[in-house]
Image (cartoon, rainbow, N blue to C red):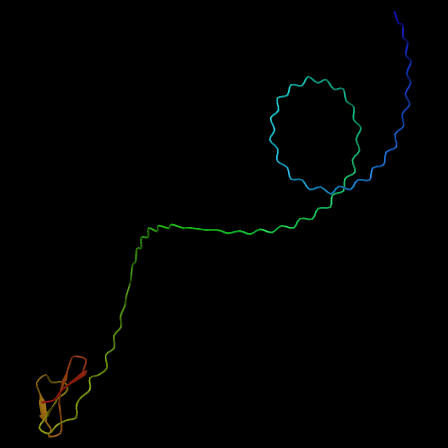
Length: 135
C-alpha cells in the first residue's frame, strides 16, 4: 500500500512578446473525408483583448467580353388621322402674240366679240380670269 500526499502550488507569470512577419503562398488542394464523433465537455473562460489594424489595398482589373444576341419582335399599330387643307393659286394663262384677223371678246358679254386686226379672242370666266384663245 502506498499513501501519497501531494500539495502543489503553482505561481505562473507569463510575459509574452510576439513579433510576427508572415509571407505566405498557399497552393492548396484538399480532398477531405471526415467521419468525426466528438464527445466534448469544455469549461472555458476567455478574457480576450484584440487590437487589430488592417491596411488593405486592392488592385482589381476586370476584362469583360459580352456577346449579346437580341431577338426583337415589334407589333406596331398606327392610327393616323390627316386633316389636309390645300389652297391652290393658279397663275393667269399666257396669251400668245395676237395675229391679224383675230377677235377680242368683250368683257361682260358671253357672245360679243370685237374684230381687231391685231387682237386675240379672250374668253372670260365668271371671275374674269382670261383664257386666251387665238383663232
